[in-house]
Length: 96
Image (tube, rainbow, N blue to C red):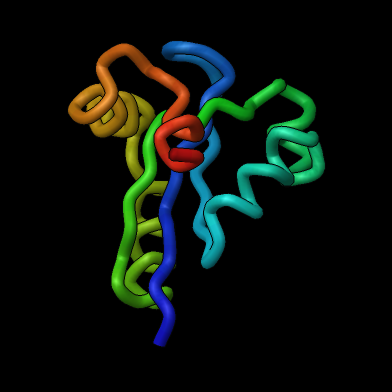
């Protein structure tokens, strides 16, 4: 079984948020940065990778994504700020 990534994108600190799941974070981020990842992200200019987490199975990643999507906005912000208080674009960490 392949693992998967759960991610939260933002357009700026405390801005619009988008939660997603993918098998290939690099390819998915390229889509979002080019404006083809989702209509919602393209509409609001959401392309900053604010939070990313790896799960050993795609089923676990999907379950986590569904749970996070149901969270209150404040909880998502707490999750982001726990590991990324400056809201840096984590995409550059992945590129290394």
